[in-house]
Length: 293
Image (cartoon, rainbow, N blue to C red; front, side):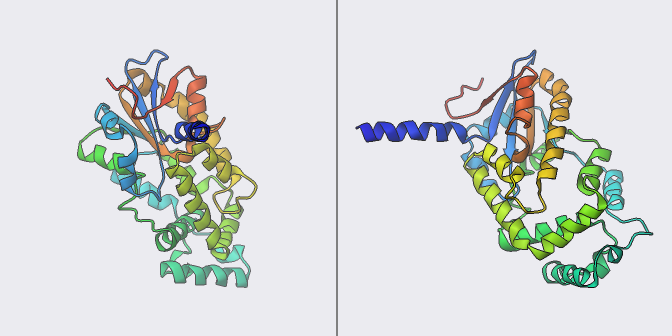
């Protein structure tokens, strides 16, 4: 009997910790809103295991996400921002051996080398390469990913979708948040050590499915992380989280918002949840026992 009680006592903290869906209320909000942490490598079938998820989504009237690109002008701006200036040549930033290594890795994984991709910024090439690595070695399927599921559903339902970043900020995050020379180093790094990227993303996905969002933050920002998703990236995320908490205010005051963001943004003392609590909101996990009215 004592062993059973001890087991239950040990299990309870794990159950409380395993959360990816949160309810936001208080601080003058006219209705409840909800915050869902997502993960790109996690299949949409995982969503069925999150208590009350579809029920709370049905009670919302708008979706808030990192950025919302809906028009052709924005897509054209994204494509243009991914390109290098005509005066810049990637070959000038590498030794012959480094350039050859990158070119061969890209050809092997993407089917295109630097002759075809060399006009793109290193940050964009890195993301293209990482995405293909995940498809080949981590079972990533963008059509089955849970990360943007509710954005797609909202589009089908004509439910409004709002981005927390504007187009300029989105372009910065995608292509220019790191200095150019650092982007070049990161491209070399990922082609030299692709296994680091796959290992990190698999670990993040595993922690996510267990609801261990704080451990995701520790893994990403810790000194043992040598992947291209580095501590400097986390610092950028942390700064943005603080601004996002302010930008969410009008949506939260109105209520009925469904916020869907990468889970790495949520936990920790510099996570979005912490900033929302500091602003006076009540943020609590949604579970099977939560009464939803």
